[in-house]
Amino acid sequence: MPQAAKAILGQAALCDTVVPNPTNQLLYGLAGLSPLQPTVAASSPGLQWFMSSAAGTCPASAVDHGFLLDWTDPSRATAAQQNVASFLLGGPVAATPVVVP
Image (cartoon, rainbow, N blue to C red; front, side, top):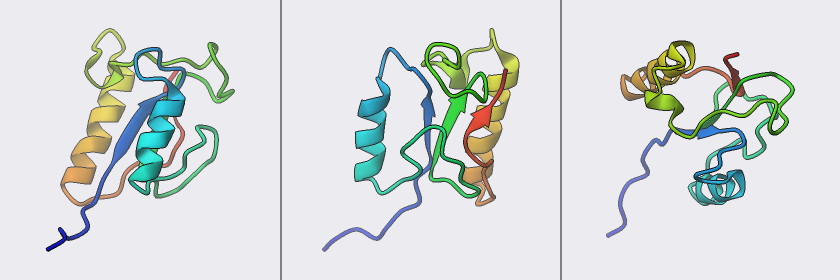
C-alpha cells in the first residue's frame, strides 16, 4: 500500500559548494517542490532559496551550506529556523527567495 502524501519544506543555499545547486534542484524537483530556480519568486514555496543579496548571482549572493545552524550569521540562521518551526507547526513559510544580507 502506498504511503499518503506528506508536506515537505526544502531549504537550499545559493552557490552551495557542499551540495551544488543542480543537485538540490534535482532532489527537490523529484520531490515535486518549487521554485527550482533560485531567483523565481514564490509566495508559498515548497523550496526556499537563501541568498545574501537580491542579485541572485554566484559568488556575490552565496550562502554557506550550514546556514541553518551557522550562528556566525545569526540573522540568516534565525530566519531559516523560524521558517522550519512555522512549517512544522502548520503555519506559513516566508516567500522565496529569502534574502538575508
